[in-house]
Amino acid sequence: MSKQQPPSAQPCCQQQRRTFLTRLSIGLSAVIGFMIALPGIGFVLAPVFRKPKQKWRTVGKLADFKVGGFVLVQYEDPSPVAWAGVTATAGAWIRRASESEFIAFSINCRHLGCPVRWVEDPRLFMCPCHGGVYYEDGTVAAGPPPEPLERLNVRIRAGLVEIETGPTPLTLTKLT
Image (cartoon, rainbow, N blue to C red; front, side, top):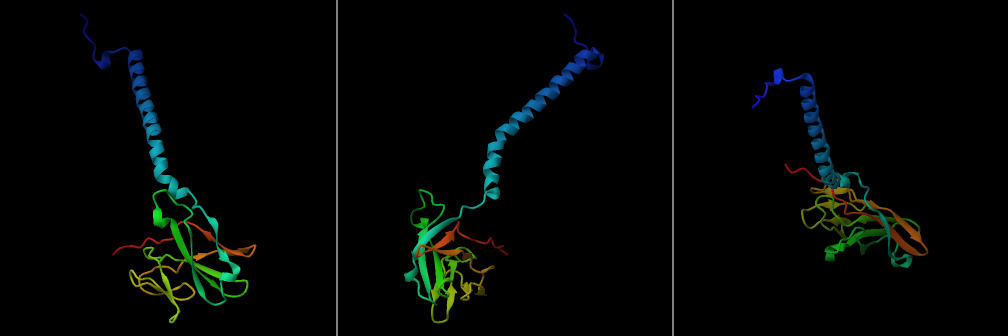
């Protein structure tokens, strides 16, 4: 029976081979671990770098909009999922400012996304959930909303009014 020599007494090549194999196994383990974790990292970080999908939606005929008044229009959400149900429908307030100019605002309050409604007499948008109030131009008049209503692009094509839609615009507010 031969006794094993202490590491300091082992031949030089055997010590180098052992160090090389140790480093090789640690390196390969790190590469394999990274390859296993990469899909999960991609899943978590992809939404940060992905540009939201924008889509033009037809919301009515040119004749449906009278100069000066706001009209509530509904359209299919640009990113619906099968289980969304009723929430797959989104809305916007459109005002025909002149014969060729339209102004559109997302229906969602910038505080927490509740639907705002247009009240004609004071000429204000009001959020029933948390008391947010917006002026006719979409700027904040009162309440917790940190930003104005989101404006949507509007165009006229072949006598139809279209708006450019995207995911529901929200602002993350700090809770203090």
